[in-house]
Image (cartoon, rainbow, N blue to C red; front, side, top):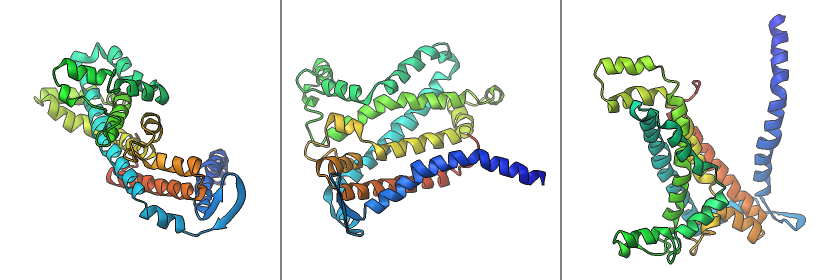
Amino acid sequence: MKTLRYNRIAILYILPAFLLILSFVFLPIVYNLYNSMFRWSSFDAAKTFVGFNYYGRLFKDPVFYISLKNNSLYAVISLVFQVGGGLVIAAVMEDKLIRKFQPFFRTVFFIPSVISIAVVGLMWQLLYNPEIGLVNGFLHAIGHSRWAHSWLGDSNTAIFAVIFVSQWQYTGYMAMLFLISMQKIPAEYYEAAMIDGASKIKTFLKITIPQIREMILVGTVITVIGAFKVFDEVYVMTGGGPGRSTEVLGTMLYRAAFRNDEMGYASAIGTVIFIITLILSLLQMKLGKSGQEV
């Protein structure tokens, strides 16, 4: 009887959060799927049922595959730099020789992540400027003028220039997450490794990585989901151009919804983004054997 009463109390505590998540997360997802089956405009309440036609159109649209390729590039490069690079930076900062300078480096690495995306985009547009930008100026100064060109104006380099800005902004943030996780590892593990004569690289691979495995999984999921939801960096810096070379799924959705007023098509793109991120997240959690406490 007492157990039943405790269960009811527990359900009452959970119920508000459950209702909020149901109302603001799951119902909009279902409603978006419903909207993707209609042709409708943001200026007209009338809707025409089209079934899954928008999905057929989307999978025949060459811009969709350009966007998917760019989002995938974003994810792979971000995994290497933000997760891989962040791990290395955190491990170096946690080293005894560097630890006393850690507050300074923590501030330096974390600052880019708190700057507004709009400010970052405009700042890097200026840095990439082919005439007055510091990037080309630096290349001229070190004698590599042949490498200087319009980084955002060239369809071959524009997407990589935008992706680089994302790495500049968020690698430090990811390093801070890993650093906090590393600081929870008992010092006795490292002392035992030192007594056994393990090198720093072996200690990193055999002790640090396994001990922060769950945080690495969280960082990986955040990075990959962020790569497929990216919008603002691309929109501010290139608007999807030159041509459609830097188009990503987010800018494609925006163009369909707010420039072409094809709300049903935009809803279909949104549903596809949700399905991609859901599958990737479930796959990552399965591979990472998630379920333990972080």
